[in-house]
Amino acid sequence: MPPASQWPLNVNRVRELTATETSIVVLLFAAALPLMPVFDAPTHGDVRLYRSVADGMRNGQMPYRDRPLEYPPYALPLLLLPCLGARSEAGYQDGFAALVLLVIILTVWAGPLSAQASATATQLLKPQHYIDAVLGGAP
Image 1 (cartoon, one colour):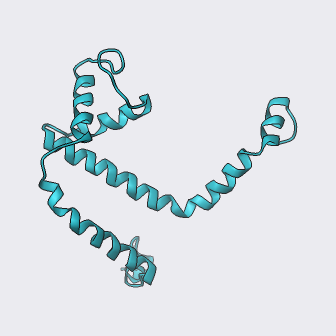
Image 2: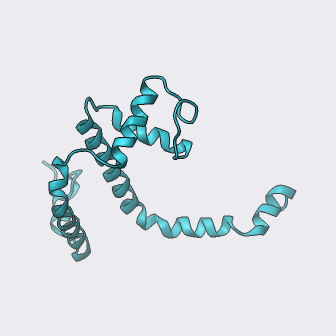
Image 3: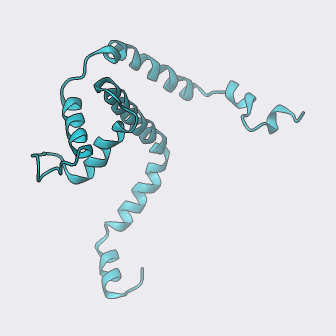
């Protein structure tokens, strides 16, 4: 058997959580506690509208043509995603909550990458970059 340091999941690393990592985990659990009663709450508000739009699309309705919709077209796939496993209104609400949680996790995970993304965006926003791209100048 190889030593623990060569295992795919390094057990020693799990034991060595930094204070920051531990604080983040504790904060996430503490922030989730007040939301526990909401998990059994009836569907209300926008989630009911989202399900109505998604059900209409699944039944052949075209948003903007067959029904008014105040959301942009790129939001439609996000409204349909929770329908994949949902058989009921509560199932759609659970799927929508999972989608929101996934977006939050991806946002937190992408945080360290934001410095690089910010530098790239700053470079792209320089007018000279577009002038060179259009006129064929140096990048």
